[in-house]
Image (cartoon, rainbow, N blue to C red):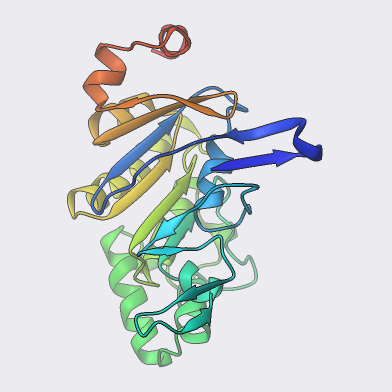
Length: 246
């Protein structure tokens, strides 16, 4: 996969090839500006790659059309596809004028056509799971950063995605709030959710990830198990990076 800007002079992604398997918890690490977020956002076409393919459920989603099981050419419905990929950003992207419950139920009702009562029941179950059921009628401004991010995670889960994409979900949080968000993500990993996590939290990458990617300068320089990456790094750039962050 490639993503170039300004006629190819800026190479945000310069030939990144990776397989993400069902149940993987893939941690993506590397210095700022290495292409980690561009890689993540390309997976659900929030960034359109300049070149390469993204195969999801047997379909190259970079193409506008594909052949279905009957051999007929059909148009790719990118909005429907994105429903299968939950996304959690650095900043919580909650609607400030809506209660937490309304933030949770908006997409299931509008996009999936779920009845209000069913959407609210599911939302309250998810909020209860992250210890925030009692804040259902609160507004985002009344929540701490860690609470907002927990809501953002379960809001994505309300759409019942098959993959969860996390773009540095703890980087905007005060240090004492990071743990409560990582705990929710650890639970998801233990339940078998397929996750791709761009993170600066090396402890999370080592403990929870089953695979770690190291990116720099738009390239994937090394990948492997947490033990491979953290205990036996091969690439000089990775060794240098780890010496600075560990």
